[in-house]
Length: 123
Image 1 (cartoon, one colour):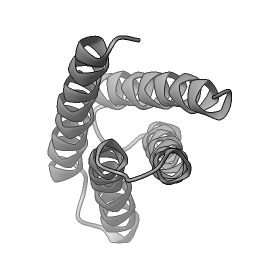
Image 2 (cartoon, rainbow, N blue to C red):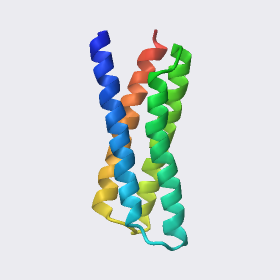
Image 3 (tube, rainbow, N blue to C red):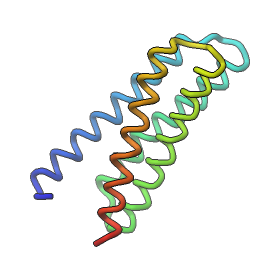
Image 4 (cartoon, rainbow, N blue to C red):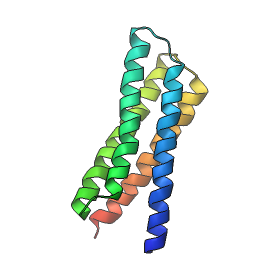
């Protein structure tokens, strides 16, 4: 990938992961304030914001191994988001359509970053 294309990719992924985090936070605001709802809120907010923050950190990492490490954390956090969204669907709490849409986005983000990590590991 050319430098300018790489820069565009990084910026688009920064925006995409941040938009995903905002979407998840908005989703949690609609969850019930009972024990389970509050637990899912906390876990989902932590993992979705970590997805965005760790992706940003990967963009400024000083070495390929550091980038790979941050991408790995980002992938794990996106997968955790997918879990909590799926769990909310299973428990029938929150907007199922919104949870399904966010779950798909979490999966797509993780899939894209898995491919990026594989490409870096081949270098």
